[in-house]
Length: 362
Image 1 (cartoon, rainbow, N blue to C red):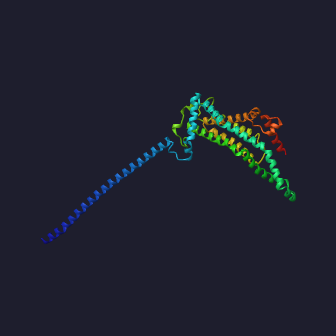
Image 2 (image 1 turned 180 degrees about the vertical axis):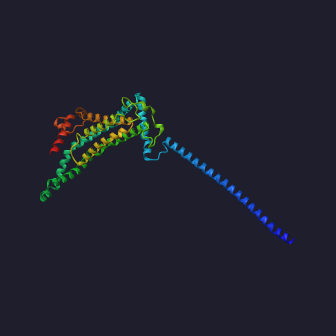
Image 3 (image 1 turned 45 degrees about the vertical axis):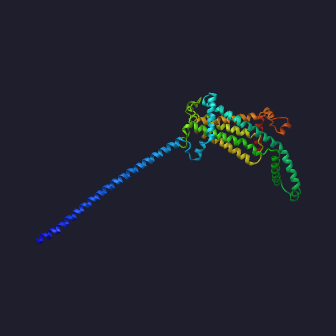
């Protein structure tokens, strides 16, 4: 009995230990299941947050593509600026008033803008050039007088050569020119007002036409509210679709050729002086050639605007070089008035290229 009791005494604790272990394992299993369920809930929540974040980001991208206020880059700010929208409103207003197709209304609006804005400034520029040319003898006379008063004795004592004397005289001419330009209110920097008006006008209309056609929308910002669908069938002749580039490359070639003609016309009355004006002229010639492949990539609406603007520039330069027009607008220098002959365009071209040939021979 003692043995049994002892054995039973030994067995019962083992049973209770086993039972306690089973209960512990059950608790652990319950805890594990609760942890798994919690982790699954956390994962589901994380996935929901991720999908919510994706939806928010997608909606932000949609808002960014559809609104002009979300643009951040400099180019996007320029495209959504007020001058660009104002230029587009002017083009649309010209289209509604005239009732012409888009290709004709773009051309008419371009000519009207250039005639209202750049023609008076071009006449002002020509008048400043005439004043400067009329003051050239006085500037030269003052420089010679100043040279004789200051450096005549020194030049004879030190036996200056012609090159050194020319350098000193040119410095004297620059000093006297500054004083005379201020006195007569005809500083050459005032002539830059035409360029400072023409370049922003050209950029504004070009970018507004870019917004209207929706060109290069895959790489840059585009506001769908600015797109004009009727431009797709507003062309004529071989460029019926103004949204697409010119298929025959006639408009880009015309843009480059007209820009070259315009540059050559502007350099007819320019005197041969320092190397800087020649450098600027050669740079402009190079840009007129570089613009041809750029225009071939642009929509026909932009290329048509560029061609119309270049055509107007050529016509304006030819108009302001007519002898009767120059007399009527008082754009004739005193030297030509004393000669009694105002050179027309043919004589100016002959004189320029004949002088260039003689300089090459020398």
